[in-house]
Image (tube, rainbow, N blue to C red; front, side, top):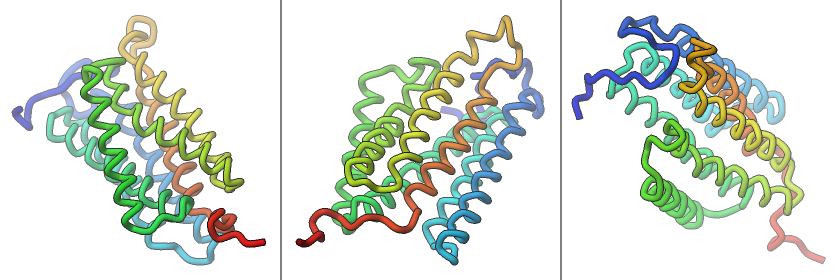
Length: 224
């Protein structure tokens, strides 16, 4: 596929000019706000900014950058960059959950990432990529987040509530992403910009949940 080919996926775009999607472009600032909030929250709770907090915050900014480029240039290469930054954030978040909350060492983390990769491949094989306006691509991270929330709840881990909240918010975000084209006749700017705002909140909730201090010890280490 030609990386410079144009892509028109969203209701707000009416031509190929750079600012044809102003709301979809500018709402990516929400990811910068999310990154700042992640860093500030971790520094307040732990006194220092941990390496994984810094990397997740940087990736949140890159998610916004990739999305901004896609909603301005509207090209295949910008779409690839958008998806790449999202994928890297998701995989790092899963890895840190498995290490921090589940207490797995690197072989277990690697197995978990491979299993998640298999889930992604299965979802792509089971559904055409245009299903639900492409929102089907985000079902695997939604499922992972829900499973992680249940796991944390069973362990009485403080990550349970923010992860559950993030999962519910992500459902709402996916609904807004899916109906973008359908509401065009009644709402010409569409609903995709609201997806950005909610997803930025989801990234903040998920990242700070995984990075939060003060966890209960794993059952295997408990005595008495």
